Image (cartoon, rainbow, N blue to C red):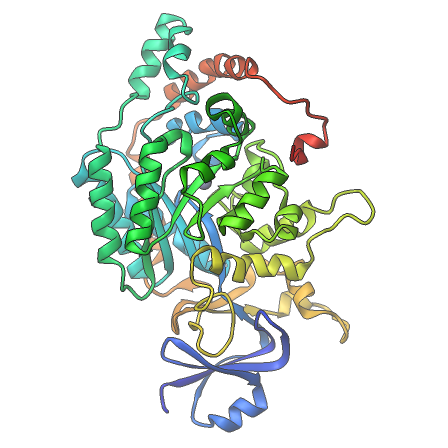
Amino acid sequence: MTDIRLIRGRWVFTGDETLTDGAIAIQNDTILAVGAWDTLQAQYPQAKTLGSEQFAVMPGLVNAHHHSNGVPNSLQGVEDDFLELWLLANLGARGQDTRLKTLLSIAQLLQSGVTSVVDVARISGSPAACFDDLNARLQAYEQAGMRVALNPGANYQSYLVHEEDQAFLSALPSGLRQQLTELVPLTQPLAQADYLSLMTDLVKAYQAHFHINVWFGPPGPQWVGDELLVQMADAAERLGTQMQTHALESLPEKLIGPRFYGKSVVAHLKDLGVLSPRFSMAHGVWLTEADIEILAETGAAVSHNPSSNLRLRSGIAPLSAMLAGGVTVGLGMDGNTLGDDEDMFAEMRLAARLHRTPELGSPTPSYEDIFAIATTGGARLMGQAQRIGKLAPGYQADVVLVKCDRITWPWVAPDINPLHLMLMRAKAMDVDTVLVGGRVVLRSGQPTGFDLEAIGQETAAQLDAQPSRESYRALVAELKPYLADWYSRWEMPPLTPYAAFNSRT
Ligand SMILES: [Zn+2]
């Protein structure tokens, strides 16, 4: 019995209820019991205790869509823009060592109470180079002890403008065309067969791993093509793993449905047979009511990424309609939050406010709904609903201790709703201790698996040593009006200012 530990809190948010002066008992990696502090203390008098009445205790948060950017765009001089322009603008960022940038991102996530993440990795190059890149990421998660579904994918088409690359290039002035083709090669060195075999090996290698899974990660339907997408879905089914793609993020990504498939993107994915509970899409800003029905029917899930959708002028996803329609929804930060700080509490706060539309009587998500999508919703999206996302017996001991002193200072009414208080006021800076599978991975706000300060210094030295990429940024700036002009020729549905955020027809 000596390996049993208790975690005590002024409030314990289990996911089903809030306990005042509660506790959980954990043994090794698993939660044994949840209850009143007095009861559990009497039951396990020898158990070591973490936490106290100074803390709130909650299940680890699930970030359902993420990119390990390390040093973020804002520090690299890359400004926010429309998705399509911003993707090119990112070429103006200096390259970072894969292991270092993954560790930097892991630290930020743990520091905001995230214990599980779907980490999307864009790979390119020879099979050996891609393997090394992915291996560095997997080693970082191993070292940090964080739970991850690594989601690698490569682009195979639509490098510049969705399926119209050649026509777009031909329309550019020749000097600009030449510079652009040097910067963005229109071929992928990693053959599709090599991608599939590399992924199959990795999925198998991590199948029984305690906190790491590998998924198939098509970056977007328009970036991989139908044939490969179907092959990935088949392989995911055969290997018992999942897949996640970007879809319906920007307005052009809505328009490619009628333009290239003759139907909505989701109807097209359904016809391909790739939608299932193993499938999730990031964003889904432009889902229609009919799309939402298809997702609910097939069990396919959505990661809602409100900050990123605002930063990249994508719009506001129909969260209330998705929840009312019975779609599995998780909350994701996309490595692209409003404050560029990966603060999951800020993201929950944004999601809780963004969908309160002005019409009286319209459904609006409650704090309970938002807490659920950031925990159990994400767990379901990850195919781990019986294992993570709640504090309940038999679940993994993924637990976050949040300091209450700043949140409750200088006074708090005795009859407040503690969950509402936490979601209204807590920030990443209040997270003190984080456990993943019973192992303490963050203590006093610092990762236990690596020296964050040293990783930061090493990163800064590596970035300093690289030449400026100002010329790339100048090229993208020159290209911008041509891209904007190209998209302006696409047939656009009528959008009123409000419907532009909520058009579901
Ligand atoms: Zn993304």
